[in-house]
Image (cartoon, rainbow, N blue to C red; front, top):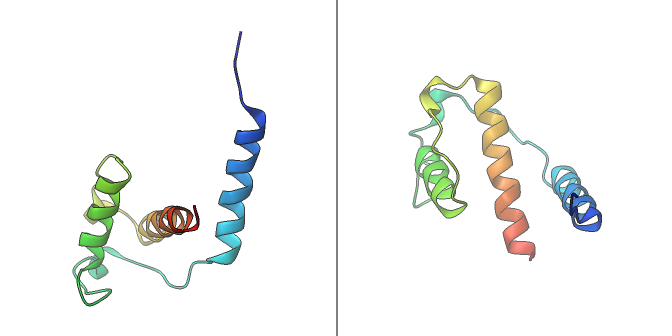
Length: 87
């Protein structure tokens, strides 16, 4: 009836939780931070848009996100990048 790979599901959840513990949120981000350079090459907004394209995610309305939502979203993207680098 349902073909669920429980081992993969559990592995994915464990990997996500391990990445959260290894890479805790370091700061908060607000809409005012979107156009500030986060490295030599890109702004926070560019980083998010590039990440959405890379991971085939739906584009979010960044300017309307609360500080909590934006911070959580950036941390989620950071964890995805960390997972990609690890595997």
